[in-house]
Amino acid sequence: MTPGGYKEAEEELKQLKRTDRPAVIRAIAEAREHGDLSENAEYHAAKEQQGHIETRIKILEGLIGRADVIDVTKLSGAIKFGATVELVDEDTDQEKTYQIVGESEADIERNLLNIRSPIARALIGKEEGDSVEVRTPGGVKSYEVLSVKFI
Image 1 (cartoon, rainbow, N blue to C red):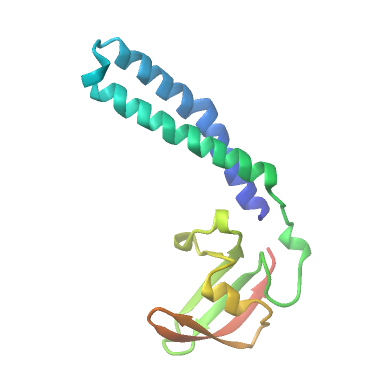
Image 2 (spheres, helix red, strand yellow):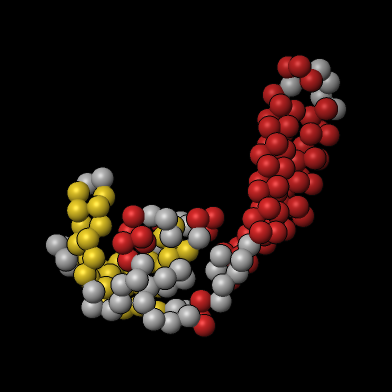
């Protein structure tokens, strides 16, 4: 896991424990005051939300407890976990930048690629100037590696 991913997990866990959990406990208490729980939609919604919060807390605690944080700034060389890679699509000339991260911190909308994704697997071991072909559901895509950074 990258230090950034670890920090985000810790912050989310703090948010859940300090803010979200107490808020849902208050919501359950308020809903109980409305009487008959069998037909109390607010109560059932709050209990469901509490279940989601407790599940997420357990997931994050396990993740943080097992995390192997790698300082990517101390890495160099070919593409590997933690690398920030600038690519150009050889067909469209569109440039993209991705960081290769662990499964738990992957978020394609933030350009954080899961190390197990087809693109990341194809990039591992490549260097600046290399071309790579990636098999996607839409067909084979070709990219050129413009830069590899560990930031």
